[in-house]
Length: 303
Image 1 (cartoon, rainbow, N blue to C red):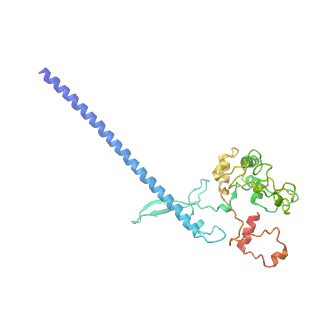
Image 2 (cartoon, rainbow, N blue to C red):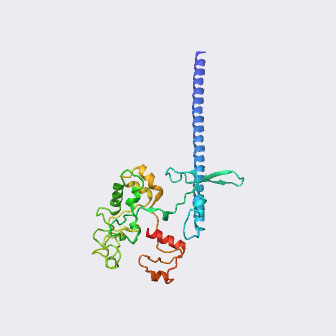
Image 3 (tube, helix red, strand yellow):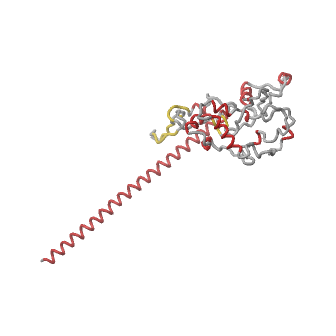
């Protein structure tokens, strides 16, 4: 009788143990299935977000391809279609884009995206802008966009130390030797031309001085830097300058670019005439009859 009771006790312990293991397995299985369900849902949402982002980019590209105006303005479709106050797309603290909703065949919302299209040509290129000639001789001739005054630009934002930021930017761009290209070398081999063309090419207030083609602004080439020169590949690389605080960067981000390129041609693809050298006779001869848009381009180019 005692042995039978012992057997019943062992059987009870065995049954309880099996049930406990089965319970643990069931809980583990349920937990695993829940994780798998979440993983599948995350994959679905990631794929949906990716396709929505691709749809936004494709839509923006299509709108830009349809833009046939030679001069950009805030009335163009690329601006009016995407601009709104729903979301701050560039994280500068100001809403700039609107949500565009995507629907399925049942007219149910499946997602949304927001696109920000910026006219890079209207922004200050941090790889090019440098200084404006302050000489009393006032011989600034608009030879290159190098003469856009980066120092004055920075000073308008009330930054923590605009003068130091300006100097740090030049130090970063021009490297250890502090000169465009390789110091004391005519990198682009134009010294003979620039030294005798009657133009103040380096905006120092002196025309055709000795060595004007050496270490001149055009030796800083963002597409293929010479010597120890470095470029900002994106506006966000501006934060590599230690003297620029996050607050400083947020203040100027909406106004800078690292991408804009000016091919120096008019709206019809013709090389622009340099009005610094056109006399009244040339203007009156009819050889130069710009449209209003072309005049705007000239003003922008010479600024």
